[in-house]
Image 1 (cartoon, rainbow, N blue to C red):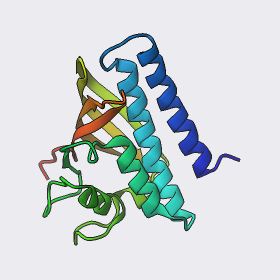
Image 2 (tube, one colour):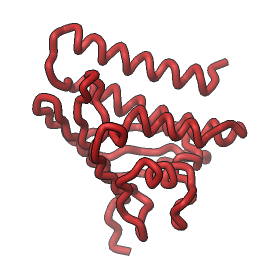
Image 3 (cartoon, one colour):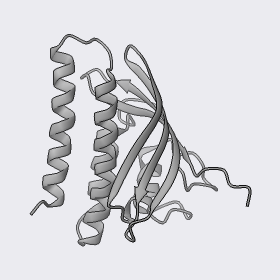
Length: 180
């Protein structure tokens, strides 16, 4: 049986393995493989937060670890515009991001990541890499408990940290336009 900790550890290992290979090969900047790996691991982390919540575990700590792993709040400024944020549209601090993911201090936040979701699938429209910075844009699809997918549009910006890790420095997501 695969549990949340096993999945999180496997995602971290896959991310680290891809990252280590890139650095061992002498790359001084980000690679498409690193961006794909961080996207996949980010999605698996969202699924895991919901699983920990559903199982009655410490989902707030799981979400905090997710934010610290994937977002550069500890290293500098992060521009974060979450999908379901309307009143407090931008989440420039760790605490604001945590509130969005699991609920908390901001009234409109019901906990996006505790929905839960069973899968996150990415369809990149494109990725632009320039040295230690990268941008990607496309759609990601969140599989809900009933098996349906919610399509969300995204733009992510990544920066390579001093330790070589790519982290998110820009995250903008929104629901597709509807004339209704």
